[in-house]
Image 1 (cartoon, protein in one colour):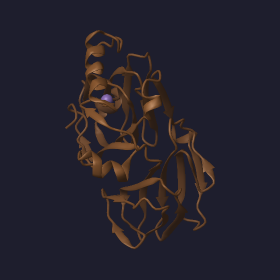
Image 2: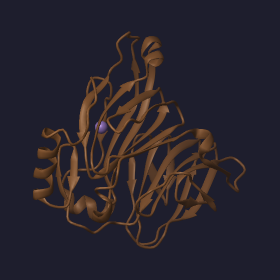
Image 3: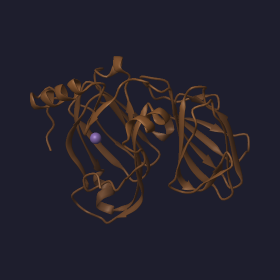
Image 4: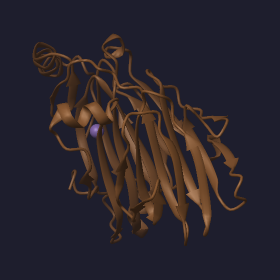
Length: 275
Ligand code: MN
């Protein structure tokens, strides 16, 4: 559990070197597979905590999440929406089930991705992008059965609305029953696909529900099919190839920068946020 509101599987192992050569700029993927939460007046979630040096990207498939941070940003995302927060130089934030969702209870299904920032952008001012399902570029695929929603970067000739600090493609591909999606990802980009619903066959390999497909970094041509329909989260990005120093909620390049982050939180430089 992350707090009491997010029951997640951590998909990226913490052996940084091996996994980062295949997954950078994506550093962590917490996957909350569907969980039925009982109704409760006081929302479950994670209380005030800091971040520096990266972005948290929350993608809601079912359920609603409320966010508040010390940079003055707040918002609620519902099923189909994405919250793309640049922690940059530092924020305190809290993440909870949205009040109404908490009162009624129901299925919660979500991804939180940590996107590393390039060294030159780690100390950018915090930024908050609320991207609703309606904001995303929608593309009907040539099979006549499937569609893609592009969140960031360009895929199937459509550009997603998210601003990113390094080249990234993020998209949700909904394969219909008997659907086929063919696309190529840029040479040199890392690439991964999380199967969030249904099951698929990706480049000849079975990709069942809740599994992660990790590609070789070699300019992948992707051929995905599904017999009964599937929802795929496609993530691809240019590797940063910079040193990583990570501890808890901080993701920096050196140990000194981690120590500085702890000192800056203690000195109140991340601002103030009430619990
Ligand atoms: Mn957080």
